[in-house]
Length: 96
Image 1 (cartoon, rainbow, N blue to C red):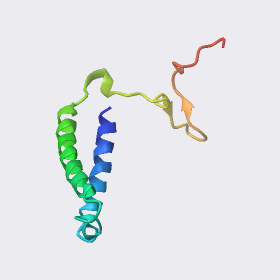
Image 2 (cartoon, one colour):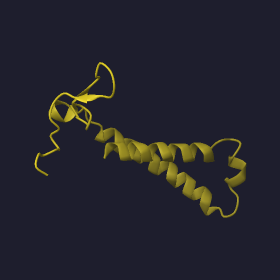
Image 3 (cartoon, rainbow, N blue to C red):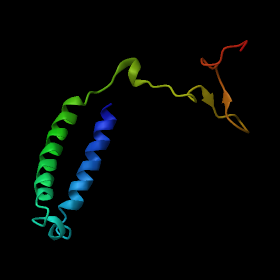
């Protein structure tokens, strides 16, 4: 879940950075419809609040949850050829 908010924050920062670029500001700042200028200011405030929220959500994960084992965790490099399995696949049940 944390990655989702971090990704959103990055997207919003990029959008606001583009809008507030000095080369782009004359195109929209104070131009009709003026509500757009207001909404950009509100978006900047919302991004600041999202930054505070994301900072509160950051936790260092330790223990068993820190050791995420993917599908290929039990593979080793064979002396030649493709990878070979070094222990039984926990997702494969015999007799299926």
